[in-house]
Image 1 (cartoon, one colour):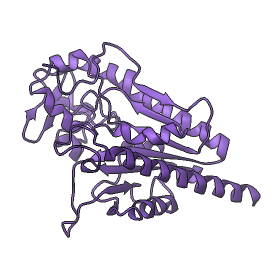
Image 2: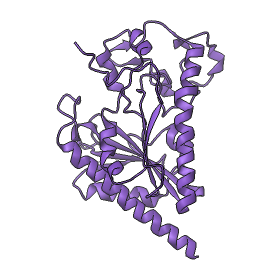
Image 3: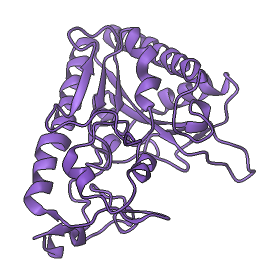
Image 4: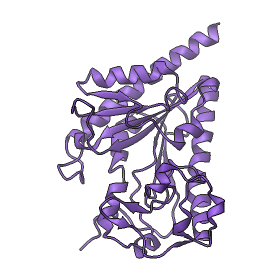
Length: 295
């Protein structure tokens, strides 16, 4: 029986795929860091749990939600390796030293709440499943993951945003994720969460416009709660330099089946909705650029 978590097993490949970066038709870059489905054999060989548990770490098929924007010409970067291999939305220091052989705990003196909960740079455990790995990872192996998969992704995001800013005078990173069904205090299901690190990674105008866009389509939208954004926004959002970044979380039940495993027909309409949001943001960014150039 085929492993349910594997899209394609690879021994070595690029850590990401790129689209529409030969020329920039829009000042918006789409990033999808958690939808990777290329599971390296050494990862699967060290599993302490059923491979199906790793699906919970994926932003399952979030790359499909970027398809309409990519087809319309928006530049995009999509991670190929899974979050179980390395979490691109974590700082390189967010490591649990107890899961790495040869690593001294003094090297990570300030362990974050996320790391303690098992969801650091290298995920360690999942609620209801326990520890994911049979044996500790070797320290050099972890360093190799950082150098070959984590840092190249971020270096490319920086490069692309700088190129877009050079072309347009501004740039916006839309960091696309998906979330399990969540509800607000009134038990109303949240369709989209827009995170901007409470205003630190993006001009409020773009976040507000995106929120209005999804609300007009009949969805309940919240900002920064329960997800405000992580390392990707911290590293790449620089509003003072007119490089903006926000995180868009999409309720998985909007585009996956009842088991939250496979895309359904509605995934196309959600992808189109995201494409239309990108178009609206691109128009706003280009208009602002023209106004600033005229001053």
